[in-house]
Image (cartoon, rainbow, N blue to C red; front, side):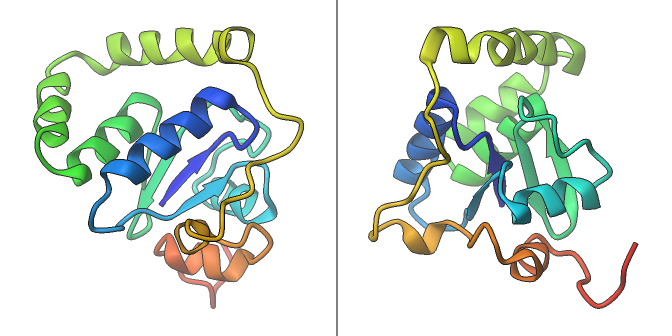
Length: 148
């Protein structure tokens, strides 16, 4: 599962890029601004008002910033998995410095939408219902029967 800033044009373009390369349709997406996105972010112990961080969640384990991007790249298969493996040799602080720089300027450079992305009917199955918190938590691999 990939959580992204749903109003950010760069983030939406990145989601489209992943969708085009995710031939096995392994990824599901949810905007950070939705109730489901906020619930997942809270479950992993992060601030749900922090929208500048890409989050990747799989089987209840999460990655943020550059680690999340590399996790997505690894799951896309060759050649992207090879690029992700090579990028892991850069220290995380260096990778995250670049990530934070882009995140801080993304609205100014790429713009933003007035509202979160609404998927086309063809892509609807790739996006989680932003209002269905239980389904989103379950898809992310969290136990939905116990409260933490």
